[in-house]
Amino acid sequence: MKIASWNVNSIKARLANATDWVREARPDVLLLQEIKCQDADFPVLEFQSLGYQVHAHGQKSYNGVAVLSREKPDAVRTRLAGDDADEQSRYIEADFGGVTVCGLYLPNGNPRPGEKYDYKLGWMRRLQARAAELLAEERPFLMAGDYNVCPLDVDVFDPIGFAEDALCWPDSRRAFRSLLNLGLTEAWRALHPTKVDYTFWDYQAGAWPKNNGLRIDHFLLSPQLADRLVSCEIDRNPRGREKASDHTPIICEIAAAA
DNA sequence: ATGACCCCCCTGGGGGGA
Image 1 (cartoon, rainbow, N blue to C red):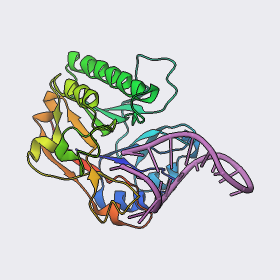
Image 2 (image 1 turned 90 degrees about the vertical axis):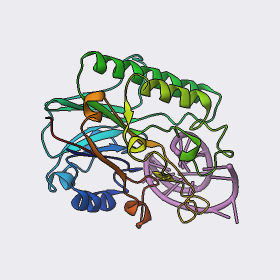
Image 3 (image 1 turned 180 degrees about the vertical axis):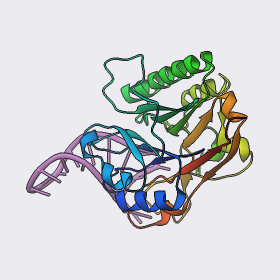
């Protein structure tokens, strides 16, 4: 099972880029973040014609997540429990056989300190509560998406310049580690212990040609899926194309259940 | 890490991203 995650920074602006990449990569499941449209405005037909089902959880202008899949999911759930007043579309889950695939767009949290940072930490606590529930059910699952956290300094092109940033601040890293310490495996780092690579390059200041990137898009696997982890790779190619998103896809392959 | 971008709103510029 090949699962990909990509923050597309508007699915409408990225339609040609995204469909080109799907044709090449043919993931079984594609998790999208920042679709930036309401569900009715998602270009469903274009992906259906490529053989994908679309389940979008969007909102006007901002945020928005989606699950695209070649197989029909058994169930789809949206929203993260723990804050009924939270109107931001940032979370979706879909069940495929015995595996639950969770797609997420974690709040950026800047400026920090402030209410946006408090929202980020609260959201991370809610995500951790959901992970704990799925672990208690002993359900094989993965949580993938734009975490807006650089786990270590090696995941940042300029750790000193970013030390105060919400993506790197100790409370953000602590909350990320706390999630891992439930017993989850960060797939890319597990397979590439000393590698330096990124999933995001700012549009500004020549960040892409200078390789001034951040590694903020991650796959976290439950123990059952960590045992079946085959590969996890970042595909830089889409970032170098015309009308690119500022993020590039990350792809994780999970072996069939024994 | 903002001089330097891009996308959203829907037209003149503000909000947001990371």
